[in-house]
Image 1 (cartoon, rainbow, N blue to C red):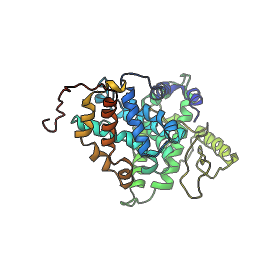
Image 2 (image 1 turned 135 degrees about the vertical axis):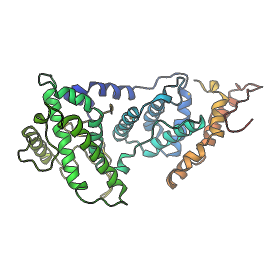
Image 3 (image 1 turned 90 degrees about the horizontal axis):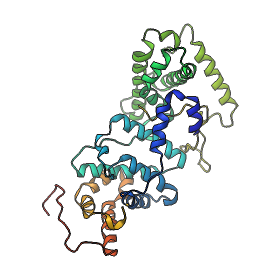
Image 4 (image 1 turned 45 degrees about the horizontal axis):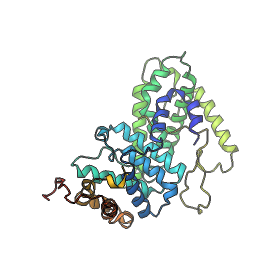
Length: 360
């Protein structure tokens, strides 16, 4: 994925690129750095990951979730931010080949913390590869919806410098919608096919937003394509762009696989490919619509992990998660508490903390 090229191709989404940059900033060594480091080390070890390769994304995700921070901003995160964060996660997983268990481990820690302070989690993890057919295309459509107000304002002014670029962006997403609807959602959807249902729900939402905010607006209808599968007069701009894309993909090696993706080296035949890189011609995902030194860690944090339902949260997953994260709460407590003993920094008369579950 060439983010710099996308910035040039889609300048009208400049706020998106800023958010991507913010999510991907290096983690500063603040007073919570060592705390996050200990937890990420445990998560990566239990996931049998590679600390050298995976720690950076884990640390960034823990910071972006915000629950191990001095401020309380994580308590007021909005749904749009969660969508943005999940898109950044997907991008990072594909770029750095991050095992999903590391991501779910971070969210397990976040969920346990939130329940420990008797607060509903503000964000959940979206497993795009598990929940959706053609996940990269789904991300493109959802991000189009997230930025539909920007797209609308850009298309209202033909003198806008980014007008033509925005029109091409619309064509790309409309063509994705049409091809996916025809392939997956033009027939009766079995009620037991959850993955197909979720995919078609996204297409349905895209259709509703596109019609309401763009196609049915006076002054826009004649400048953008219809979502109807059959048009008496196909929208010329989209037809030209679609033909260019088709020819480009046909000329590429491995054109039989999904445009914009390539299979990782060593993948076995029939296995799900790991998307390591996207073609520069594919539209980018959009993120608009995602320890203090050891001696300074308070006993309260250890008690949080001891007396909150972290074990329940971690073990409520599937059997794989049970094997991977069982006893993570106990290990976190040992890492945080006993290192303080080794450093000789524990107070001889520690304060008593009540975390809201039972008197101590």
